Image 1 (tube, rainbow, N blue to C red):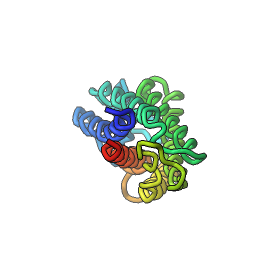
Image 2: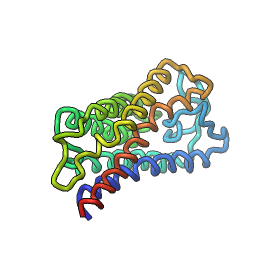
Image 3: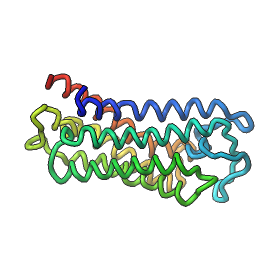
Image 4: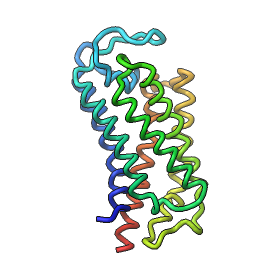
Amino acid sequence: MTTNRLGGLCWLLAGPLFLAANLVTGLGWRRPPYDWTQHNISDLGNVTCGRWDTTRPREVCSPWHLLLNSAAVTTGILLALGVLLAWSALGRGTAVRVTRWLVLGAAGGYLLVGLFPADAHENAHVLGALLIFGSGNLAMPVAALVRRSGEGDPGGGGAALAAVRWASVTFGLLGLVGTALFLAQVDLGFGVGGMERVAVFPLLGWAAIVGARLLRSADRSR
């Protein structure tokens, strides 16, 4: 298996893994039950039970927090490996270089979020969340600037970012708007927890699309 293919597989798996961990960890909640509209993603990773957050107080008790935190670390590793293994296949040029580093920044954010739960290491956790919100969601509109010409590699995979420009624009705008509304505590009827997911999940969906494109390009080159 080529490194481009491995990189695409890493990006393809990152989103489903993190989403599954959200779903399964939430099932472990009893008192209170987990509410996707009212509870933050980070609440799933809190290591203690009790009333949490002075800004928006809520009861938090996540018995399976280790699963969510491990999944966040793994997601960060998969995103980083995707960039590093498929480095040349993503293309050349300024927009590609900036996209790579922004995704790596988001990957670092997932590592911080998973290694430092919010109720145990709040400052490091908040830094990680900001990297996911900022670096991750900026990566997609920057990727939309990648041009088709002059960005291929001999294996034919270098057009991956240019070929999914529509996804970069759509998911990037969705993530940036979701981030702005979440930070402003405007939920549009989704709840604050729901709006946080609008801010977080677009990057993972976009990575899956790019990953699938990388896999297809690797198959064609063979």
